[in-house]
Image (cartoon, rainbow over all chains, first blue to last red; front, side, top):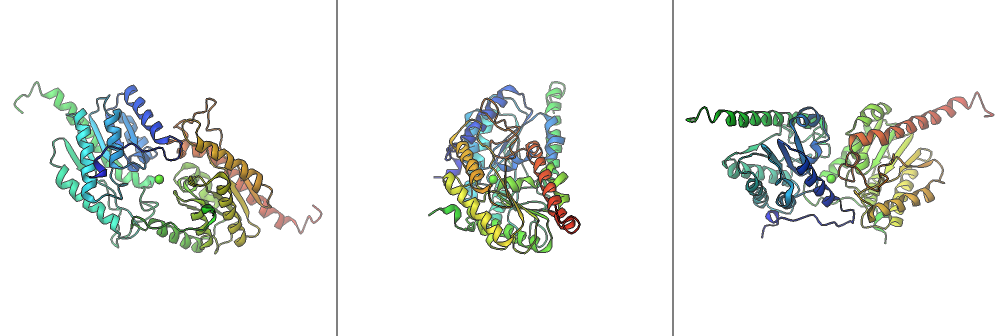
Length: 228
Length: 228
Ligand SMILES: [Ca+2]
């Protein structure tokens, strides 16, 4: 039994009901707004909305941010299957999840991500889905970082060939030549600083704009260029 | 046995050694730099370093930030007792911790905060210590928020009378009249947005500057104005 691929809500261990309140807020935003782009996932997505790169490049693209920092694949899967992306018609969906699945093997994590993709695809057969590779972690070389590399390789091998799905590596090279990660990039050796976000996510905003252009063009051009 | 007052390092559960690497970096910063102000604690301190209010008002005051997001009182206590503030001579030490001690009672948390204060005091006899009250949490009224209120009342009652210690409430009123907290202030109903940081922590920078002025003035003036 792979826990990473079984949809699971986050229990309200402490009594502040934060997780469910966030989920309900996302449901409202999903219904009220008409996003072209939805980002869903864990801290990588959640913290992005508190950065300059978000304000400067993502907000104007009608992006919704459905990130919850501590979520694992099974939690994002639960949110996907419980309405967060159902009542909208986005052109592009960005998924970044798996970094919190410490208890799962690399293969299990990738199955969890795969389950998220399948769920997204069931609601949006034609949307472009962009899966982000996980960022490295730890100041020095360590087993978690190695597992992340395995996860990224498996994503590349298993997910990339699916239609309308891209696997994207946004890491500009946070691991330095001596194998260390600088806290100016990942301040606690896991989470990106705002400058690191600008460096890593600027290319994603370019990719999204390109995808939106291509999707829009395809719609316009198909009737006039049926042979292509 | 109150776990909140027993100095405890954070075990490296996952193998990425993040916590110990951060602690060692803080030790180096403590020895290399000569801070006037040190802030130590949990996410409230850690996330402050990634905000405009930090860049605008705190950096220029020679502040060091020793925040680790997930730390409980017992972890900050361990860091204090293991060299993070020992090798320096700061004028002001700001402490914000306790919000992650979910498993402890309000009384236990306050004992944990007090243990941190006592440990700080053992190294720095005459430094001014500023203890921050905890911020509210949860979208709606909830048991955790009530415990936070109890902790804050106890901090006020038990610490405020101590010499050279201030207990400060930086909450500008994040709980609205209907009892809810807006995600534009606390984005996940626990962590402050950058805008909320500006609102809440500008007054702290004013207080710190005032304290530094007061600590500097008596030395200069005592010889010329002995009667005052
Ligand atoms: Ca966290």
